[in-house]
Each structure stands twice: as structure tokens, then as C-alpha cells.
Image 1: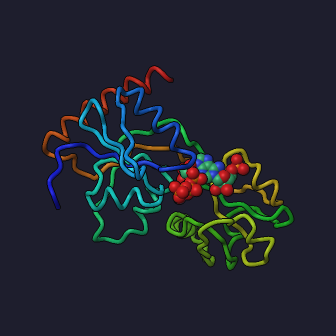
Image 2: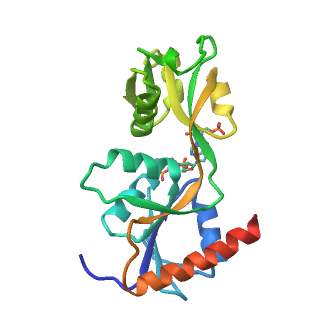
Length: 223
Ligand code: PRT
Ligand code: ZN
């Protein structure tokens, strides 16, 4: 791969994490000039650029070395770690960023008599997080079918294609609207700064150190 001397951060192009991530980077003293295709933002002061992508692509862009850092939900990062395969290098969560908070939870139809994970034995559970769900089921010793859906997971029980779901919950409004009840939390999530296991050993490493220092200052002020 071509050597780079500028730090490159992957972040969500358009979604829940976009505004707060840009806001955080600005508070760290970074400013960017957006390119015409809106995929790449060139850093004007410091040698730090942005790549604007789908959030789901962020972990693999880091794993491939296309980007040094990523701002992504812990849910997406951990799912990637569990499903990427052994040839993919481990990624690290450098800092929790304090926005994009939600949880990955099991939810069942209101009428489902649920007293604990053992009641999921033999059921079909719809999710966009098959890796995290399978790991949790394994830990609980429960055998259940994992149905992977890209979206609209919450309507699967009503359609009769699943008995329960495992999805992100924030206010709980979506669950209520779909007559579902949250039963177990698998993961508490928020946006995190993700990176490859080993920091770059060139100037990018120095810039990363500076960025982390500023980030810690900004996060401390916020708390
Ligand atoms: O296009 P792209 O693939 O980049 O975006 P996306 O649609 O996959 O992601 P987006 O923007 O919806 O979410 C990005 C990240 O925000 C997620 O990966 C989470 O880390 C975080 N986040 C925080 C959430 C929520 N809160 C959230 N409430 N992501 C999704 N939701 C959805 C959830 O899936 C469910 O459908 O909102 C609904 C539940 O919300 P409540 O408030 O009704 O409980
Ligand atoms: Zn996505």
C-alpha cells in the first residue's frame, strides 16, 4: 500500500453520528475542506483528513489500513471483530466519545411469557448483529435460530418470521410502537474512536498522540 504521511479518519457520511463527530473534531481544533464528491475532506490546519462512508464500512477500512482511525458505534465495531474472520487484524477502541448512546437488546412480543434467556431456547431471533447475538446465546447456553436482517428488524415478530428480536434501543419508542418489550441488554453502546491494534510508527503516530490529548481535554470539559 502507498505510504501516507497524513492521518486519515473514517466517519459516517450521513446519519446519527455525523453531526456530533464533526462537532467533536472541530472542538479538537481540526477544520476541513470538503471535496466535490463529498467522500473526502481535506484537513486545512493539521495533517488529518476525513473519509465519509457508511458506518458499516468503517471497521474494515481501518483493518485494511485505508484509514488510521474511525468514529463508529461500539455495536458496529464489536460486531465486526466477531465476524471478520481470523485473517483480519484486531482493532482497538481508543476512546469512548460520549454520543450516539444506545443499547443492543433482546425484545419479545408483549404476550411472550419471558422469564429469562432460557425461554429463548428453540426460538428464531431476528437481528442485524448475528455475531453479538450468537456470542450472547452461547454464553447463556441457549440454542436459538439467528435470522440476519439488514433492517426493519422490529417488524419480524409481527410478520411471523421471528419470535424475538435483538436490536438497538434508545428511547424504547420503536419497541412500544411494535408491541415489543425489552428483556435483556447485550451491549451498552456509544460512538467510539477505533484504530488498528498498533499505532502508525511514523509522523501519523505523533499526530494521533496530539489528537488524543486534545480529545481528552474536550471530553473532560464536557463531563
Ligand atoms: O447509512 P449508514 O449505514 O451509515 O447508517 P445507519 O442507518 O446504519 O446508521 P444510523 O445513522 O441509524 O446509526 C448509526 C449509529 O448510531 C448506530 O450504529 C448506533 O451506534 C447509534 N445509534 C444510537 C442508533 C440509535 N441510537 C438508534 N436508536 N442506531 C440506531 N437506532 C435505531 C434502532 O435501530 C431502532 O430502529 O433507532 C430505533 C430505536 O430507537 P428508539 O429511540 O425508538 O428506541
Ligand atoms: Zn449502517
